[in-house]
Length: 158
Image 1: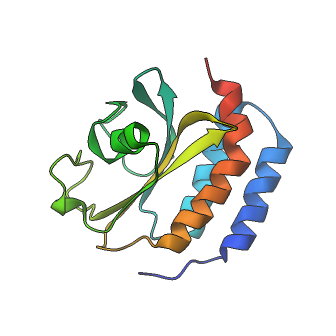
Image 2 (image 1 turned 90 degrees about the horizontal axis):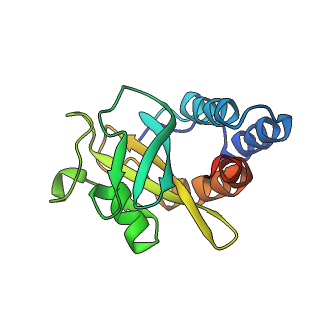
Image 3 (image 1 turned 30 degrees about the vertical axis):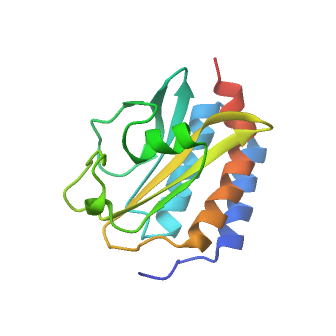
């Protein structure tokens, strides 16, 4: 796995600055995912899914376009994360029976939930093109990002 171009602490400080700067929530979140994607090249695709009832709706993202713009809770890695109310760290997606393939090159995926207090708002989803692209350190990093962006995501909630 390639090393991060910037230490997670530096990226977290930059995310905090983007959130503090304010602006329209969608624009802010688009800048956040672009920043992380640019600084951490093993995040081949990075995006947010917002929970809308029993469906995850694609929000801001960076990477190749995806046909998975609406994912029912319980379907695929993203839907499973919501159904089980826990993050997902998948070393090899080709070993899953319920995987929703976004690209033939994707081999690993990480999904980190976004909470605002006790309210589940959605998730951050990242794909990698190598088996085992993500580690517990990526999960801890994305949990911190999720905590920083949660108020912005909450402002978008219906």
